[in-house]
Structures are given as structure tokens and as C-alpha cells.
Image (cartoon, rainbow, N blue to C red; front, top):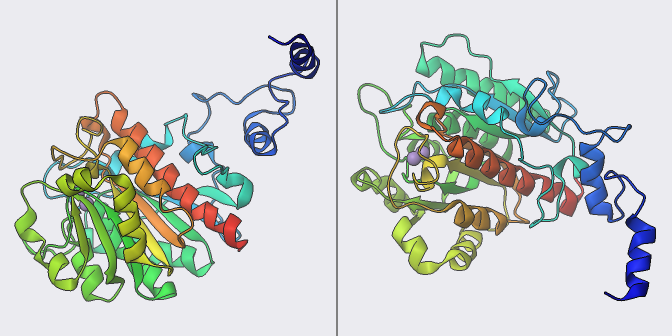
Amino acid sequence: MDEKKLKALREKYGNIGGDVVFNPTFKAVVDKLFKDDGSRTLPYGGIPTFMGLKHREDFTDLDIAVVGVPMDLGVTNRNGARFGPRAIRTMERIGPYNHALNIVPEAVCKIADVGDVPFRSRFKLEQCIEDIEVHFRRIIESDVRPLGIGGDHSISYPILKAIAAKHGPVAMVHIDAHCDTSGEYDGSKFHHGGPFRLAVLEGLIDPDRTIQIGIRGSAEFLWELSYEAGMTVIHAEEFAEMGVATVIEKARAVVGDGPVYVTFDVDGLDPAFAPGTGTPEVGGLTPREAQALLRGLAGLNVVGGDLVEVAPQYDATTNTVQVGAQMAFEILCLMALRFEIVGE
Ligand code: MN
Ligand code: MN
């Protein structure tokens, strides 16, 4: 090594603590992680919140609120996604910096974990759907963008009701093994196989500006509304043929410039990576593909999003919780990036 270079490095880095960094973006990360005395918060201690964010009851002055929705009365088979929010909050090594998008969300806007939707009863699906809408309306009416952590996928319908009340029919990027556009059965239309049929029929999402990615499994015969309404459907095998860059290009072309909602069902990922979910389907996306896809949406006007269907009791390794929390973080970064770009 060049002697002069080595001397300069020794002078600059030889006698400083780990909390001293010179790159301003890295400094924003360090300032989040280190306390004034140079120590770091224990990642395994304290009361867990998503990403270690501050917990706040009052969301009125926030830019983005992370909201737990521990409700799984809409599942068609294996339950357990009600435990998703609590499990995801225990994950560490999520954020605060996204090197690919070069953003520390907490450094560009005000974000907090605002706890869970208050439910009046644990027994009534229809009533829970109302409770979710009421709570998300309050958040959105305060000009706060919500990131929901489910819960099963039935929660997206009431969230979209609240989103559309403010923004009108939105575009949507939907990652899932299932289109979730099926109809009523067993006396309910609110189950997790049907939120986007309701959203289309009620004018909450614009099907022409909606793309559904990762679709596969044995339920294709239930998704005819997606095709008839004009939603763009990318099956898992098509994803593999197209490659992630082409899928990103397609997604951006479909959703356009308007407000967009991003909904991520963890079963869109292959069960090799995300077994902890109620309706796993073989042949899905890898976490790296999904991450690249989400990062490829940078710059879109993401007005809200959700991460759903993490059911920790089928997740012996905690991989599903880890990858679910990471995908939620990627969506959070997209939402925060917009504040940096537009300066809202
Ligand atoms: Mn789903
Ligand atoms: Mn699914």
C-alpha cells in the first residue's frame, strides 16, 4: 500500500469512534443508531416496534404511519396471520438505511409505529372490516400515508376504501400468488380471496392501472374478473421468462404517474423462502426478485401500502417474518422517497 495513503487513512480513522462517519447519508444512519455516549441500542431489548420506530398514539403530525392489523377472520384455510404484526415488530436488521435506494426514510419524513387497529370484537369479520376502514380514514384524513401490516389479505379492501375516499380510484401494484378477485361464498364476500373484486366493483382501484404479479397455483379459475376488468396479470412463470427488468418496465407503464397503492402478499414469494403463510404455492418469486421489483418502482407516487399474510406459526425458521418485514421496509422506502423527491 502507498505510504502516503496509509498515513492519511491512519490520521483520519485511527482515533475515532464508530459513531463518527464523514459521508452525510451514512451519518444519518449512524445518528439513528448511536446514542450520545457512543453506545448503541440493543436490537433484542426494549418494547418491539416495526424497525424500532417510535411508538405514537397520536399520528396527526406524521407523514407515514405503520399500522398493525392483527385480523385473520378472512382466511379460507390455515389461519394465523393475526400474529403477523406482533412477529414482524420483533424483527431486527430491517432498515434504517436502504443502500440500493440510498435513503434513510426516518431522515426525510416523520414516521412512527402507531400500534394496531382497535377492533370492537374479535369474532365478526364484517365488523372488523368496518373498524379497519374507520381507523385508516382517520389516519389518511390527517394527511398521513399508511403502511398496513396484516393480517390476512381481506384487510386491503377497507384500507383501499379509505385510500380512495381521499385520492379517488388509485393504481395498484399487487404481488401475490393469487389475484384475490373471486366472489362471495360460504355467505361472505369479505374473505381474503376477494378484496380486489370488491375494490374494482366499488371503484376504489382502476383495473386498467393495476398489475398483479407472481400469480400461480390451482385457483386460476377464480380470477376471471381480473381479465375482464382489464387488470394486467403476470404469472410466476411469465415473470421468470420476462426477467425482473421487463416486469418493472411493464409495471411502471401500467400504473402511470398517479397515486398508487402497493400491496404485498408474502405468499407471492416461493414457500422455500416464505413457508409461514396460510396458502403457500410452489414456484414463486425469490426475495431478491421481489426486492428488485419494488426498488424498480422508485419515484412513483406511493400513497399507501400493505404487507399481509405472514402466519408465524408455520414459520419454523422465522424466514417468513424476516422477509416479510424486509418487503414492508422496501415499500416504506418507496413511500418515503416520494417525500424526498417532491418535498411534500
Ligand atoms: Mn392475497
Ligand atoms: Mn396469496
